[in-house]
Length: 351
Image (cartoon, rainbow, N blue to C red; front, side, top):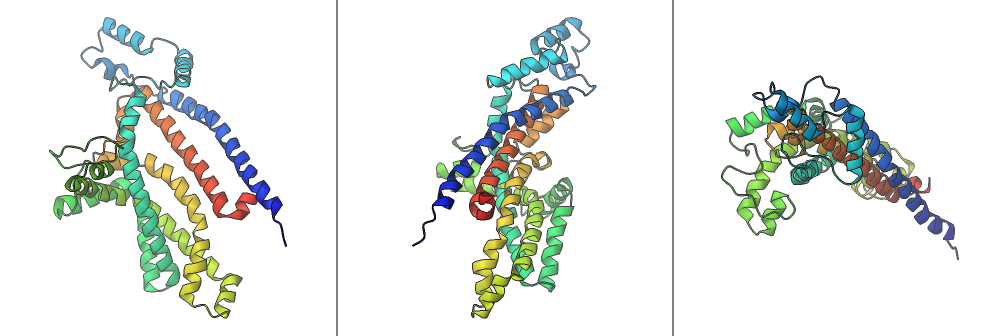
């Protein structure tokens, strides 16, 4: 009778200590991100007062002085920084120069649109990428392998903005088989707000036509956004599966009488999926914050378009708020990925 006490006792506390260490370091990393974003955004030579007071009033000293005092622009850069950090510790990300609303409120309103787009892009990228990788590995050096690799390489190489414009022109403007820009068709009323995901909220409201309309507008931008991830995952899956197929356990399983399909489906594919977890976790943050161009092209009212609008008007609080949100997303994605990877692969957990 064997008792496995040491492994069972140590694994839980080890994972817990690792998680707590990572969480404890997040505030310092976020402070560094905010500091860099704060000073870089204010290093631009342009003046945000033109966007605040308007071009007609920019030459009026009284109005300009009042605007500077209201938004704290009459203080030194260090004074503005320490004031911002003090407000940040109280949960205040400042007020947007452009929208005149709290930045936190703006981000909360726009985040669901980006999350919906990013989640769908992630699903497309992972599912199609894994399928292409498996097809390529099972048909090594055959026409299907070359076709899958070409499609994957194309997705990783083409610029997102170029792909978005071309596919929108072809499938929407010329062929008319894809939905146009925006999250919904014109004159369509959004569903009652529950999650902020139009597809989910439409289903909750029991409005299936509205769900189909929201889904049709989601498919094309999500496919374009997920194409790059699709290429990375397919190449990784192909390489991992080919490496696993040359392992000793595969030859042993074949020698015991298991068919090639049984070995691939039960063993090779499972082991080849482990590296994909890391890519998916890191890609989630990249997909969300990389939606800037896609949201601009498709008039998607999310964080990406908010970042573009804030940059155009030198909206300092808006720019810093978007950078802070991006840092939170990346750090949490990395943390969750490492934890999940540790549970999936015992070698990582014990290390």
